[in-house]
Image 1 (cartoon, rainbow, N blue to C red):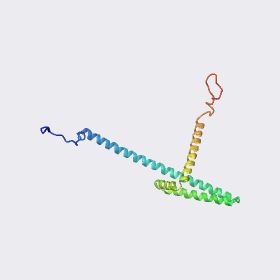
Image 2: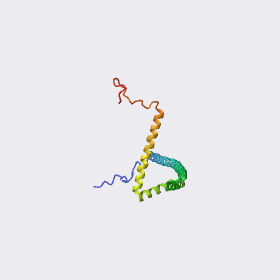
Image 3: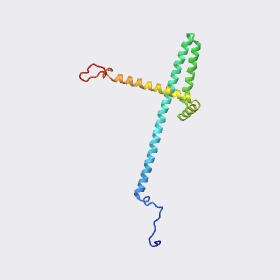
Image 4: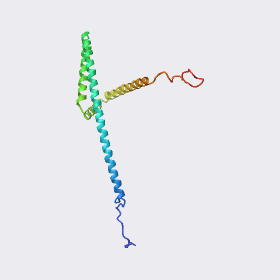
Length: 171
């Protein structure tokens, strides 16, 4: 038997969404989301700025290497080493060209170009990435070694065990 005397409550209504507390929580969540978006945008802007500076520095370095290659080509040419001099000159031209492209293009364009190259020449790309990784690792290792040797007064300190009865024996 149905009970007609008791009022029915709406079944789809969430009684918690209309309270001042839930409205405050929603506003706080909206503020936090906006702050997160602002922080992400600021981080992106800073990263783009740093990448732009590194891009310009890399272009400068490429152009410096190209200049050194040109001088080398001139010296080789003066020593009757024409074929090698021409090879050095072509390498210098290529580096100048790459430096100019690096300087003139934006980061997004360069990234798209790298992606296209990786799709077209995956083996060459992976080989280059591995070689670059080795070069960076060697650079970082030598930088760390240079830094630690300049900050430590005695580089041989710690090579021998100083425990009693073991003095002077290699550890």
